[in-house]
Image 1 (spheres, rainbow, N blue to C red):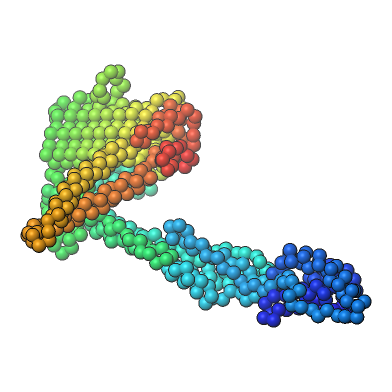
Image 2: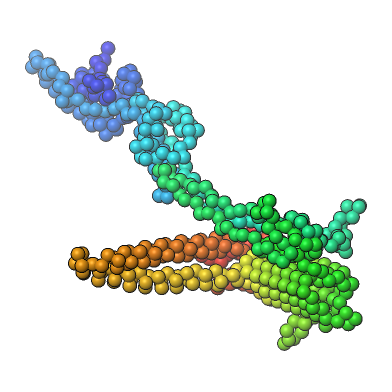
Length: 561
């Protein structure tokens, strides 16, 4: 039986190669012999030092020659532990912890053991704790890691994220929900007849309210929920912006529920940004030469048409059941036109058909018209060759999102533009500017910066006064002057902190709006279209399918929707 040339170290953690014992083998020793004897020892899963094995095999011939010389001389050299070569060792499972720079995720990389001990649940937790990972640990991921580790071959690795931070959920701003409809929603959602068909000629009954009727509900701002990193650092949430009701004429806030706005008289509800007002209403069959121009302090309801050359002015809403053709409408609230706005192509002159609204303008279509809105511009069929200046959004599509073409003219929207088709096959020049509110938002940030600069000047003067005070021996410093300067310093520091927080909030709001604002086209973008967001412009020379034009990081891009 061949002599054993491998043995365990005294502590059982390594396998030693004995060159002299190997030299007494009857046949030439090979790598396979070493592996076979490792298996006999039960150390086949130990970590193998490849270079040590090569070195051991290279020394075998030397050991054999020495053994032969010893035998011829009648002596037998003892095997010295110093001659042994470590060729394999037992290694326990290894763990490497990696944490993302932002502290929002931690991962474990496990190297399976070489004949050593496998991972244990408590061991995993101890390693995480030693790396100060204390929040967001997923037990299911740890259990999966433990089970996967058992199936690995020695030295194989597996990596899994095991701890996750949580981003803060910022508070929601105050939200106002109308509890009564307005005429604009009737145009976008015509009444349904008994046979299920839609009748575009029917707006339904005129929306009126009674005294004491709820008009609007306020949902207060929320504080938000803080987040955390895997190291337990708290990520504070920003509270939502709190706003109060604007109780317009004819309304009041309920005493029983301060989040409900009530009507204080009967009339026509006119929606405002943070409230409503109740208008008296003037009802007309039409506006023509017989009625003359109309100017009314309240809302005007016109069941028929407004013919060319006529003017209608109202402090509230204007609702038209027919067409507005080559006429002028000016409303403090919304303008709702059921059938359409019709102008005429004119060279070198302003639009003869003009609509101006402090609120939104809603119509089935508009062509060759000048339209200005304090809020949104919405058409369900098309907008052709118009000049539109909307402080809010411009939307040209029906409820089913099948129809809605914006072609020709010059359109500006404070925020988004949403259409089904943009431009026309003939390559009609069409200019769209979105996010025109950008300069206003930036001006607010710059205004706060000017306040910060002024405050920095004041703080610098206070510091100069403090330095002068320090130059006076402490015993001679007037206590009242010391207290006064300290109080003023604290006031200015508090104001500076408030200004910087305000500026950061404005910057965050601007960045968020800029990230979300877009020109969305659900069907086709045609050549001849030019889209501008801030100073960046995209000119479309080829036809595109459903598209979204928006900022991707800092670049304006046209991408498939």
